[in-house]
Length: 210
Image 1 (cartoon, one colour):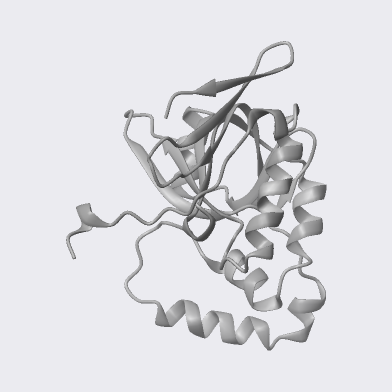
Image 2 (cartoon, helix red, strand yellow):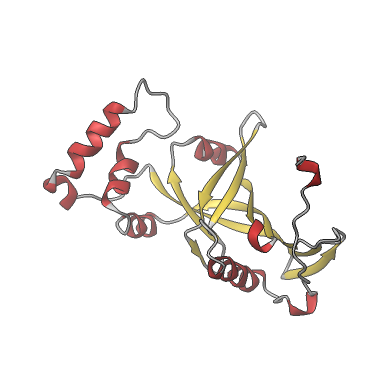
């Protein structure tokens, strides 16, 4: 079958009257729907950044926390995405769940979260994940993965090191503080429902044309 012939949308209606007036409340509801539908990596989002040379870049990161201010993800502060964020704090994020024909688009500004919060999350991770984050110079060129794997094996079997482990200063969280959030519901007739929230003095809710 030609890709252009694929038209798989179930019939759902996204009524603006049923959408919460506060987007984070609606966002949490949609995340729960995705989770309840057993969607693999339901918290995975495409994160797009822009470099100092105005070159866009996208990758998948995992949403780890939602609070009243925004969305939190974690990464290496020396990574390419972090280098981009040092130059331009504007990001775009996207969640897409094909199984339920839902999509959430976000534009916002990012800031690092306090080290204390990063360390709390870091220490909750599996030990191998903690060690990997410590030894990896994310995005840098390497000759082989073997040397890193040997180092990972050594450190994960060293009790003295494991007992004193903590989050390195070059690893931690970012919070995306949105100023635009769009909720998209796919429909078979292509008259997709789109509800947009724009942050002004307060959140303003609008309907977009498909």
